[in-house]
Image 1 (spheres, one colour):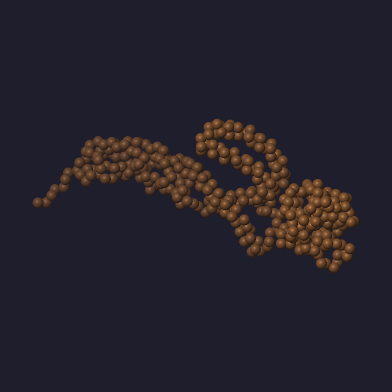
Image 2 (cartoon, helix red, strand yellow):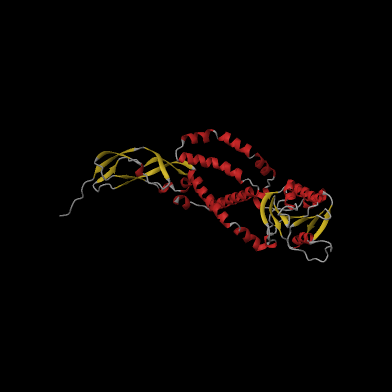
Length: 390
């Protein structure tokens, strides 16, 4: 670990940041598309395989390794609806940059059909479609639902016998987030005098936010569309659908410095979690990328007794093959490596010493795979003692 970090480059930091951002955007996108369940099921398979190997479950390991394709096919069949929906609505701009998305056509049709069905039945209602502005500070008294948008559900909510029929339904994205929401009432004098609280509340929410509102009148059995403080009657489904066709369902980005720093610190804990996970993944991947390289290393003799000396031809180097992380292998300088041979126990004449891996000093994280020759032969001659002065 220490050796890997000592060779950390700015390119590695950029690599980690890019992958962290991609995984963070992928998480947000899958969460919004309700596809996390599918991805969790797919990711669980390799996790179970690692656990089975770790605690030595041979039957489970065999099953996961040999039945992987079958299990994957079963999961695809089970989650085919989710996969189809995810692929149908995929957008690169939205995925990478979080650009605004328009309301899906299938959701738009359900809202329009539900509004006109309410009008035909003589049920009053308010359907608020949230865009970029947060409506939480503007409403109160809401009942959390978090349900899929459907015509039948809208009819059930605004049925006069339903305990949820008073107030407005808030639709955010592709979900009904809450019902019974009390909206701010418009005080505009330009509104018709015959309009009651429901109509003024429907217009009022569009005066203080970028939300759109569909107002269903129970007395006149008509549908009105409110936007930017104005409301117009819509007599046909196609006309209302056209007004809703450019409705954006993802949050807008604020301008200037607040936008920049707000985006950086938004979901900070989640971003830090992904950053740490990708950092660990970097260590794991870099550590696993093993390689081998061969070098000719010089031999360094030491601890030769004073009255002995090397004579004749002595081996100068040996060939060494090293294995380790490709990053470490490519970063260290082989000129600084030596094969050290201890001559403290030699004797005059021919000598032979067997080398071992301990004689080859290599950095931590690098292993000696092989070396040749494994034995070296050399001659030792005895030097005459220097004459002493009387």
